[in-house]
Amino acid sequence: MRAIAVLLGTALAIAATLVGWRMLQRTSERHVPASGYPASVTPEVSATTSNVGLDVPLPASELQRREYESKRIPFLSQLNTACRSYHATCHTGDDLDVLEVVLEPVPAIQTPSVHGVIEPIRDEAIRRGAWTYGYRRIRFLQSQAEGSGKPPALVAEITRTENGRWVTFLR
Image (cartoon, rainbow, N blue to C red; front, side, top):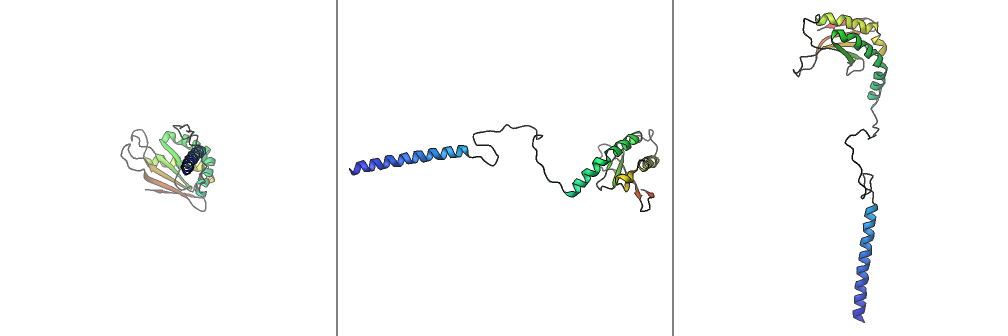
């Protein structure tokens, strides 16, 4: 009798272990990891990140910059068109109140001196109302030769005074 009880107890313990192990397996199959996909489902991996829609909150300064830039697009487009004949491009500088004009290096035969280019571009920016778009300074930079690795050199800066006059500082 004792032998039958031992065999029956052992069989019951083995059966309980198998049932518990099987239940544990089913639970882990239904578990959803932190990636958001069940363990049995493999997400399709895209080579691009264009379908990732993370909305990261931007700092107030970046929001202000984007707002200014959206309003300045027509002004900058027109000014860049006008500056094309002088081999120059315009964009907003690191400070929101700075309009940067980058003069491309061109052979001296094709263009007047740098100082001869500054005046017409300055006059065009003022005529188009640079101050109405929040620009208080116009900075002229001369690009270095391609491949030199040097940053553009400051050639001139034009500042609007409190009484509305534009003052030019040549370097």
